[in-house]
Image (cartoon, rainbow, N blue to C red; front, side):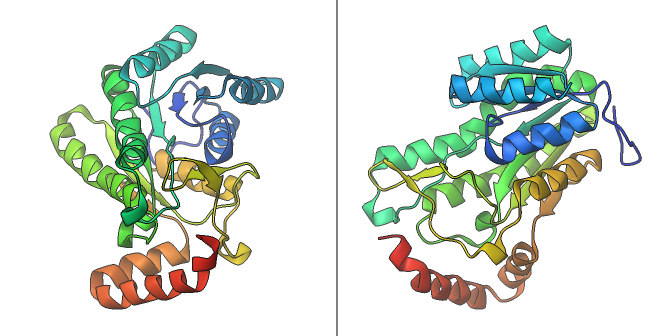
Length: 275
């Protein structure tokens, strides 16, 4: 078991979903650099293997498993990979998810469900499969959410609903499993630099580029990974990344109408990127 004063994750085993690319990949690298063994996950076999090879070449302990985290049987295989490779599991970070760029009135119901499933069951299923090992280790679970879950975001109904659900899920499990010593936390990520080929779903379920974001609002993937690492090591309950995220949290709590006005105004200015 690790605590707030620990300086190393040596001997710990972390499973990070959606770690073949992007934030998940950089989070895996950050944990490896602190001495953890890491189980990588993704749905694209070639990209996942490329990430595994790159980290292994740096001398890190890594294993990998292709698995769709919205499939419970696949999550069982994913956890089995961790146990077979390293004999234990201490940390789970549910990072894999699908985002969207579509207004609710235009979305096909199946697309809404696909996005919601990735953000809710994509966390529930890996946790359910891993829970006995995490309890045994008195370990740590972190759900990766978004600042958009704090106040909502036009064109992101299913994504925001799913990410908001994770905070309540973490709170409920914290109460249910308080006696186990298992840590449950949520990280609300803000605007982050993405891989060039990053895609989200449109109303028909087709992958499209992410909408424009001013560079000055974005953190690098490595910066976000460092914050996730600190969150886990300190066993924090909630971490809101970026000044913008913390502002949204305060405004939503104290001046919700002002928060809605700011969001709607900014969306109108950027709407040409959504059409």
